[in-house]
Amino acid sequence: MIDHTPLGQLKDFWDKEGMPYILSILDGRYRVPEIQTYATHLLGEVQARYSFQLQVTLSTTNSKDRAGKNIVLPFGASASQGRPTITFFVPAVRTLFRELRQKKLEGFRGRFERMLVTGFCHELDHLSRGMLERPTASQFVDDERIANAATCQNVMRVFVEVCGEELDKADMKVYAKWVACGRNAESQQWRDFIASTYGTISRGAWFASS
Ligand SMILES: [Zn+2]
Image (cartoon, rainbow, N blue to C red):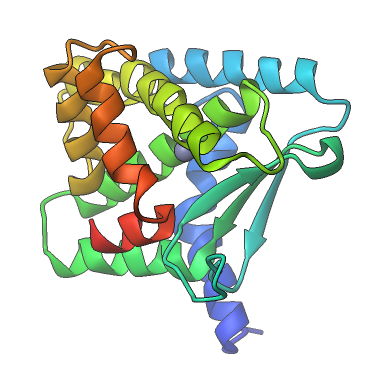
């Protein structure tokens, strides 16, 4: 029987359009070997750091910002009580999927795939370095400076330079800045870019506006 409830539709969407990419990474068979090698390395680091297995969970509601407002954050990581978790906020992920589809861009599924894989690896970049449960604003920005540099260099670079594939507009903006900064996470330009992206507005607002 087909489940036509809103929850059933969200689950159907995720099972068909999202989960296969994540499963292929977890199973060690993602189509881009260099990215698989990197993800396998990060998964090993996560396993070594925490006493619990990585959990990949789905949320059927969007996340809220500190003021309790809905934000369009597609994924996030946490490690509360030593449990490393990556959550996909399926309504936000589906919104991004539909936006890409509406733009009628060539190969929109490929763009969606790369956005999802980049996002998943980015959350692993955070978890593999350890997550602070309640970072201060400046720690939060510094974590993003390091994690975004790692994601740019090890995931986005491979899609763009090795595979010759285009990224989602928001990811491309970050990657272009990384190249312009000489791929240097310590450069003032990169620090300023990350601070302006993450320091003044919430991550969710950033995703929603990009
Ligand atoms: Zn991040």
